[in-house]
Length: 129
Image (cartoon, rainbow, N blue to C red; front, side):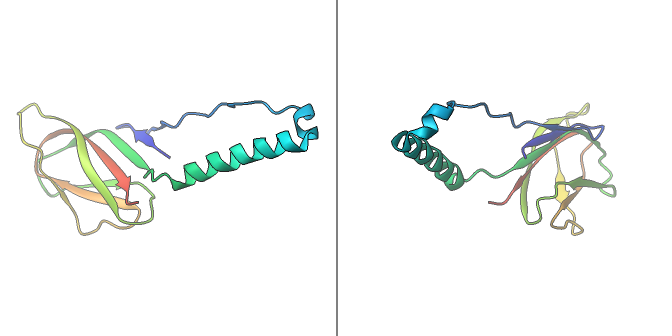
């Protein structure tokens, strides 16, 4: 579930649909040796996928933040545990430095930040693998 969430809250999933690498015919499954080869390839590929460590991440795009430090910005990620987060894009009309602080109300499914800079930020949140 790698996704992007724009400033209006619209979720855009970035994962693509996988296509077939090979087609298995009815004739193929009648041949035990050929069927065993096909199943072996499938199981090997599945094992390789399981061994890969690919943490999920979500980008919350173009979030307007103020420099007040009193406003809480809530990013609901739903990963169910500790996350890593960082800004991946920042713009400011005043050329301010970005200063974000994680708030103590952060929980397993929602990252809560305070901003001490005014501008527009994209925050990436990644599950801890």
